[in-house]
Length: 341
Image (tube, rainbow, N blue to C red; front, side):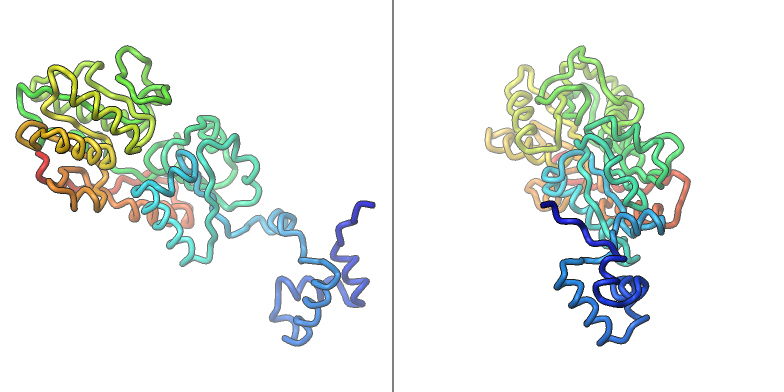
């Protein structure tokens, strides 16, 4: 026989008290004496009642004190990435200070509709792998703040990625250089490959394309042409994918003497492989990164890169959501001159 779920009214009748007393024991402890509350909670536990329905409470009150952080990719990948994990820390610390809870939501999930009724808003970090989530966030009835990409008419937190890429490339490039670019999610492919004539994806919204625009603008100013066969697509900022691209570029003929990388993780993998192969950096190969992670500064030679505060982005995104900010914000970045250029 299927067990019937106890209602608040059922419990009140069994314990011989009012429904308000049961509700106060769980939700408003200041309304009861400590002894009375402990007695009620103990009796509820004995009969298997764990309190009023939380989902119903949220729907009635219209607030849950929970903020969903929609990630660009799977949770396991994002929390292991040093840039993303630092961003998550910035978000969680700010929410905690304001009495809010954090729900991590994977960007490769099917839909946000499962949680939209139970959260107070969404922070979306990076463009989700499932594009359907972007469509749902665009029409969400709950507040949405995006980071590292834009949704029209939604507040966002970004740096000027094109200008940052332009500046680091301008510092690295000289007329006559042979240039390659290691990009991120430029085309629709699960594998590391050159983009050749493949159609580019998310051109209008992706920060990867803004960085590519900056690199190409700097190259054009130095009278350097970078063909599509010299631009690599990496599906993730991951050492495995980076090593595949690094092996290919370092054994290509003619070998580039400059590689512009869209993340420090990618650049560091290229740097390590180049040194293992006896290639002198920066004399024979100049390398730039993007992000400014601690490992890039500790590397020898140290990496020339763009520094952005991932924790600061998380803090500002949380504040924007909590304060119902409606504008788009551009945060500062810094060019770190290392020894790889």
